[in-house]
Image (cartoon, rainbow over all chains, first blue to last red; front, top):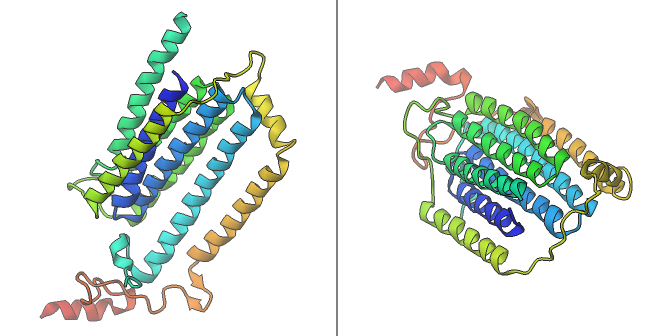
Length: 101
Length: 204
């Protein structure tokens, strides 16, 4: 387990997450892609903290901040899905193409 | 020596499992199963954080993601089609572009990981990760920690506003129309009060 292998794993998770966020039609599946991206980001942050920073506490703090971002993303995402469902009874991205030029 | 070999083996197994479950999230037929696959991927990453001796963060990951993914699974059952996975499901758009973007970002990030020279500074021997994090959270970085709390409060207010039954100008559902099955087509499934008329409409 070296920093490089940890970063490679993080890169794989981010790549899968980007694929999911771009390709999925369902809102919640799309959010899962975003979560997977943040998963990779957190892993990379912890990897840098543990192997490349001599244990400065700010490294762990950064991970906590990313965790908070993740919670906010989930909560706001679900609220937006509820709002969109109320207005349009839509659960896929194609159904809210009103502003598309 | 033996311990480090053991850690390496465990890390490789966990890494493969995290990537596999992350991949299965978008390849399973059931959305509920997808959220549990995502949970497995998160738990595996949490275990890797424990291996990296970030004790607090790894355990926090277990708890946080456990709750978060249960909410997600419930949400799937409430709102989404096909939560049980009885039919094959492949709901994607711009599929080739997405695959390309995913692979390209992996290649770029992996090249950065392989080609960059990062400083090698492992954790000092006497470091207590948990107490160091605690001292940082309630010491030098207290402002950041507190701002995260305020942002979470703002999120709670925003969530209530966005999802409340009563909108700012009356019922949130007033005048809402489902989109048509084809662009510009008739609304698919009328709102509640029109259900009688809708049934009549389907008759001819």
